[in-house]
Length: 114
Picture 1 (cartoon, rainbow, N blue to C red):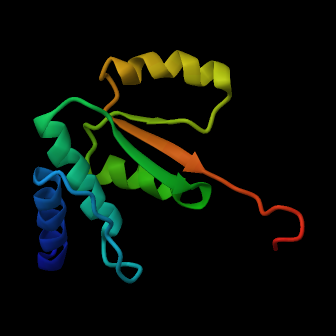
Picture 2: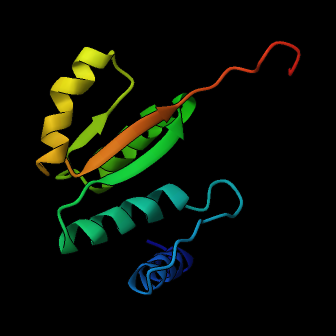
């Protein structure tokens, strides 16, 4: 990771240790995905609870590929599936067998709103 990415990671870790939430927000292409994956790996080393990533369908493939590249040992579950499949997979998540949950956020504008 680059120095500024490490600084962002350290900032997120520091917030977490103080019980404070935060959001990475900067220009595109500066490594927020990598910083978030590194943060998830940091949290995973300390606890077994799942880590939730909510993203739009347009970037889901990128998130999966980045996890495979930078945290290949991390199990992934993404819930853009029918309810019956979600029920079957959710028990593995609850048991801590899959530490990262990727959830797809998709929305459609209401009639007359764009």
